[in-house]
Image (cartoon, rainbow, N blue to C red; front, side, top):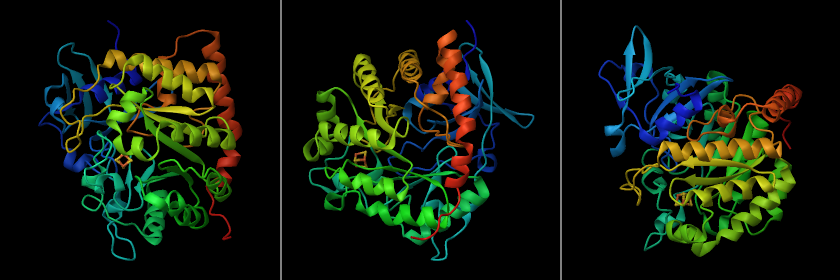
Length: 403
Ligand code: SF4
């Protein structure tokens, strides 16, 4: 059996988790496990040397299933390796250090790591209050989510614009961050308006690419305003293609929005922003594989790209006792992602330094493409697009004049 490539290893680690050998000195070497936002980033951040780039992965280590993982992390002679104890397969990995700015405070005295955290190479910030689905009685929260037990405890309950700007400035200066991702749960009538002051401030005072992930607005014209403000990326988490799974596992989204509202917002914005700028987010490993494949086709058909999370049974969520998906099935999913992006000619991995550790990104999955002319031409096209887009990104990464 040939050794796994970096993307296959990324999938294996996300599905099976990792045990940590006593030889590891992660308190000194690694980023602390941060259970913020929906909770997916609560594992160990690693990077795996790949064919085209270093692949970032957040590996489950605290979940129950990780305790019986065949993968073990060891440290020897200053280097870290993961080893599969049943097959003896071994890979070199790197353990990124915790950034110094995590310990810094903003002018208002807020610890910056309670404002935002790195999830790979980008800065993730949950804005707004705890998702209203968590506050309703009975709870209407999505069954996989833990944001209701994180926001206000592991992170600040409410972030101010100044705290966010200062944290983003530190992350840009010290960690080379180019992308800040804002998300929030359901905020009732406030809709997507709450993000506007944050986007405006980051564009004017920091100079970074900005992504927004919120529940869909029925007032589609509001997305025109976000486009004018310079939002670079939008994502819509509809999670499941199969309507029965959507209704069962996302009771709040089903009651307030319905699946169609996600499609309407995704389709509208994918057209407005153009190919490869909007994503549809789904979870793989719960609904049948053919539904996940249909979701990938649905998303790519409108020019959006699929962001696929491998299901992680998070402690504190309603699905904590569910089994994680099988790596063989997840390989099929990500091969499908890569093929769908290639066949649609979607620009993936073009923006500088956006590595997301929580998911297998479409450009991580390019390692799963079969060889041949189609793949060679697509990879050459991506390289040319990346080079051509450099001046545009250079200009977007400068603070822009105050409006
Ligand atoms: S909308 Fe669902 S996933 Fe998002 S924060 Fe609320 S409960 Fe969690």
